[in-house]
Image: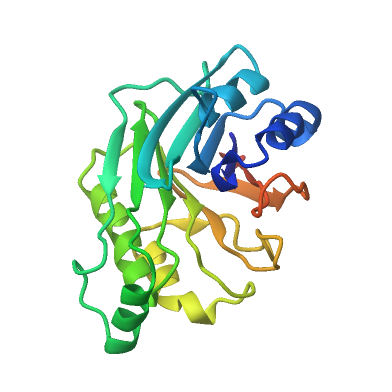
Amino acid sequence: MRICTWNIHLGRRLDRILEAVRIHSDFAGLDLMALQEASVHDGRTDAEAIASALGPEYRSFQATAQLRGERSQANALIWRQGSFELGRSPEVVTLPGRGEIQVRRVERTLLRAAPPQARMALCLESDTLRVYVLHLDVIGFTHKLEQFKAVVSHMAGRAPVPLELVAGDLNTFGPAIVQPWRRLAAAARSAGLVNVTAGIRRTHWTGQKLDAIYARAAAPVSHRAWTLKVRASDHLPVFAEINPRAA
């Protein structure tokens, strides 16, 4: 299974995104594509436009988290028919915002100074696969940890499936080192989630590593991950291949 996660920066360079999807072989045969900061252009969702560029067998679902001015800021999932079939309606998992989490004074001050943000995760599932598309807040260590835990908690309340994926923009600012986000990493490990993108050094044009893909499987899997250096957004598209491990 090949999955891509990409924060497309409100589709400000949607033409370049569509061009990249059409010409780069990394997108060929893609099974899933998780989008953050998708928007709407000319009355059409960005997810629908990208799905069309990928091919006629692709479908999409997009849900708005908040408005940035007059622009919709949304999460979305695109999937290839045959590799993923929805078994139930997509679900929006609301992530806790400011005032809903106990944080230290410094972090509370930073959160109050920043514009309020509404964050969510999408949950889409079949009988064999469950996918979460999430976008965590920009500010706050404890704040982001509790938002991530909200997704983990939602996972714990669902029936088991052979493979679960969590993909998106975690806003884990800073270079690719573990220490600043050790509590988030520990929460993922406690839930049995493996960061299949741990070896990637950066996912943003500034050199920061903000995006990740996690997997939890009932049976052993092999995986590899990479990025594609295209300047169609401030984030790079992040890819992972996750396959059953040979006996």
